[in-house]
Each structure stands twice: as C-alpha cells, then as structure tokens.
Image 1 (cartoon, one colour):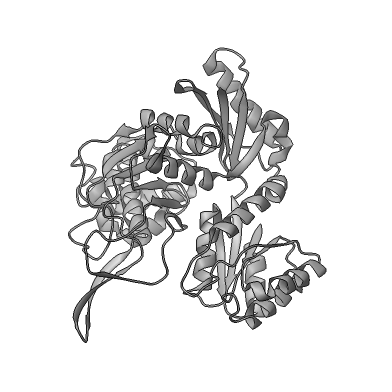
Image 2: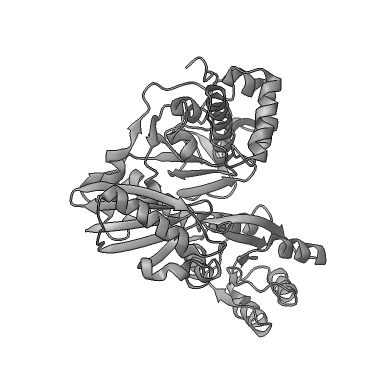
Length: 473
C-alpha cells in the first residue's frame, strides 16, 4: 500500500507519505495549519509541498489523520478522592490524548463550576466512587454540572450503581452524556481503558467537527485519534514489535515542544530489585504525562525558574544575564527559530532541563522507611530504570545542536538516587517525526509501522550524563 499519514497540528499540518512493501518513507511535507480560518487551505498547501517532493501527483490507498489542532483535546477531570478516583480519571484523560486543563475533587462548588467553565473544556470526565461505594458525590456533581452553562459532552465513568441516574440528569439538561465503565470499580484498581475508548469516540464523533477538521474530509479517509494517542500507539508498537518485526523492549519517549513536554513510557514499571514494596495506585503499562509548564518557547521562563539561571547558563556557556535576555525574547516571539550558535546552545540547554524535569516527574521514586520489622524499601510510581531505550521526538531534538546532550537529561543521575529514571538506555532520535505516523499506520499494517520506525531511528551514540554541558559536548 501507499499510505498518506496526516497530523493536523496547532502550528503545522504535517504529512508523511509511506509505502509498506518494503516499509519506507516516500516523502515528508508540511504547511502552516489554518484551523482558525479554513483547514483546507493549510492542508492543500501541505499536499502541494508533498507533490513537489514526490515529483508528481500520487494516488494513495489509505489516507489517515490525527489532530491536536486548536489547542488539542481540552479536558477537565472530576472525581471523589484526589489520590484515588480523581487520579484514575486523570490517567484516563491523559491516556486518551487529552490536554488536561483542570481537575477537581469532592463536591463541586460554584467557584469550581466557574473555574471549569473558564477552562473551556471539550469534554468533562466525571468519576467518583467505587462500584457500590459512595454515590452521593457523583450524583451531586452531576446536578451541579447539569445546571451549569457548560455545553460540552460529559463522559460518566464512576459508580455504576448510579451511572444511569447521573447520565439522565445531564441529558435532561441538554448535555450529551456517555456512560462507560468505572475508572476505579474496585478500591485501588485502575480500569481506564473503557474511559479512554469512550473519549476517543467522542473525539472522532464530535470534537473533529468542533475543531473544523471535517471541512477537509474529502482529502482523507478518517481521523482516527488525537495526535498524542497516535504517538503513544507508535511508542507501544516500537516497544512490543509486531509479527516478525521485533520491538525494542521497555522504553520512554520524550517530546519537548514550545509550550509543553510530553513523556510516554511503555513498561510495567516494576522494580528490578527484590524486596521492594509498592505504594499508591498501580501505574498504567502505557503511560503519558504532560508538563504544561515546560516548553522551550512559551514556557521557557518556567524552565529557567525550575532549573535555575546559573545551571542553564553553565550548560549553554553563556552569561546568566544573557540567558535571561534571550529567554525573554523566546517568550515574546515563540515562532522564532534559532539562527546563531548561542541561540542553538540555549535551546539545547533548555531542552536538557525540560527533559530532566519532565522525566523525573513521570518516573517513580524510591525511599527507605523504618518499620517495626526493620528498614523497608518503598517504591512510588513507575520504575523506568530498566528501559531499553530513551527516544527523543520533536523539532528541538531533530534540528538542535546536540540532541544527545538534550535527551541525556532524562537519565538517572547519582546526585538524585530516589528518582527512578532510565539508567542505561540506548539514546535514539525520531528525526523524521514518525512516531505519530507509525501510530496511524499500525491500524492498517502494524508490522510495517514497527519496521518503519526501526529503520528511521538514529542512534545518538555516546551517552551523556546529566551534568555535562552542551558547550563541553
């Protein structure tokens, strides 16, 4: 087959034309997204660019798309207990490729409802109570949402004993309600896949139209999923393999963008050492986190504050005052690409810090506590230590000065022993931005998708530790 794979992004509409026998990239192209006006304009420009690169007009057997346009899939999660059902709802939302713009626990107040409305969500995920457990809070929250000015769909994923009542209350008020299985039917047990699938269906049926993507529906066959889900699926295929094409094993993917940093892990997260006690909720095998304060353009100041001006300056071999001035310029002109050597060094230093902070937040931690029977090693969250690969994707890595240094920020470091980050992974670069494309391609030929990724990953070679500066590299 010849397959066209499309990503309607907020900034660019990206195209990858691939063949499956053998798996190969035929051409890549992109054009500025025009979602705010007419999505077909940007799509046509990207197609024209693709045809120039192919040298002719091309007939495709399949044309598949994903989208993060117009701010992506904005979602608010509402649950009962912040550490339990709300956390389960958050995991379901992030796993569905959503941009989580708010999370609320316990009974919603008027101030909460105003805050939710101000978030302008595309979907609300309403959870709360185990099956047969607390039902009062989710019912009360349903009534509050029903009386609110919100007009977005609500996915109900809470106590099944009252799910019909909750949905009925919302539908009577004119709000679409979709009932799915409880994200935590039993205490301490996650069940997020049904909610993720329900969110995906809402995205395809409603959000694609709301974002204006269906205006270009004659130019593709189907919008399958939000872009982050396509990347997650590409990561899963790369880790697991398909058919005769072997995967890489447990891995972590880092995507540093202008506004956020996404981290995906495909691993069971179990500790490699014996005698470790797990605490907290179980972790999803395929997990995604989004750090909304870490981006090398819109949120460069946040990286600077979190990592420290002196650290960034040392990594970039620049004076601290020069770093502050350049970061201010980055945030004022987020579309600016680095032109000079010092700008490229700063980008690498910011990406290194964003990677370090984001992977640390994604990974679990370990500590020794003293119990009555003696010291006990306790693990919270996922252990990423045995990840076979740490994969970089995104422009700051593909076009940056030193992607190995930038990605190396995600490695475990002796100065931070509690953090369960990858210890000795291969450092790999998705230089052609193919993870999303492989995620889409996997729906029609998973083996070709895995082979496409494996053939196009670049081995970044020598691993860099967390303290090495971009200037020294």
